[in-house]
Amino acid sequence: MMFGVSEKDKFKIEYAERIKETSARYGISYCTIKDDEYPVGLRELSNCPAVLYYKGNIEIVNRYKNMAVIGSRSASQTGLELAYSAGRSAGEIGLNLVNGLALGCDTWALKGALETGGRCIAILPCGLEQIQPKSNLKLAQEILEKGGCLLSEYPIGTEAKKYQYVERDRLQSGLSQGVLVVEAEEKSGTMHTADFALRQFKRLACYYYKIMGSPSGNRYLEESGKAKIIKTNQDLVQFMSEIIEEDVFRQVSFDDMII
Image 1 (cartoon, rainbow, N blue to C red):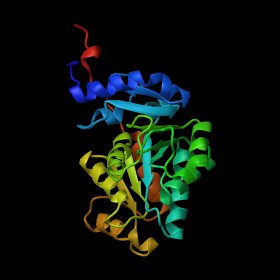
Image 2: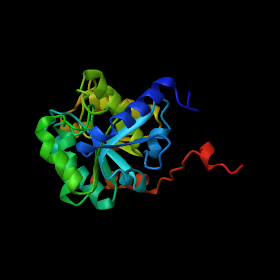
Image 3: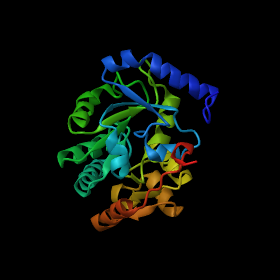
Image 4: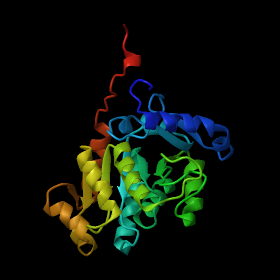
């Protein structure tokens, strides 16, 4: 067994190497947890991916701070407008905008960030030779064209399955220094990400539930006291500023030690 790597993870790393040339035909590269470009935030997860596949500029992940902006696929018009505005604000302040490229809030947050020249990171629940949802193919291409990247823990040929969306949710929060819930029902994928953020001790915020007609997820987060409540643009700017100013410490590895 490789030191610090389980047999299962060792197999994943060896498999990534075997399909390296095939992946490259799709413009896909990979890194392992031992590589410098591997996202620092994911190293802290107990179930971090041994291999991470990527397209585009993965260096932005560790070079800048990351904020996930997430929400319902069937959000209200107000929710979509807030997602777009939050994306623009993230781009303007210099944060990477992170989410899962889903329809609804995710899509509009990405569009907002790209509109203002921001950098975006989309995490997919499938192999990167395909885009889910397919209707966001052009958006994914724009992310890459404007210096962002696409990430996945799954090799080429992996179709999206329901449980993989939940696994993807842990990476959205793990990658980010802060998570903003725009609009969500209590029983939703968005709340999976919010729950992961809490377990990972990440900053969590959500919009005031009455702004959008009382979505149950936002209301739950507010009433439980588990999230910072965003009522004004000033609240949003403060939340983003806290992310920007947060110190990030990298865990020292054995390779860093001088013996």
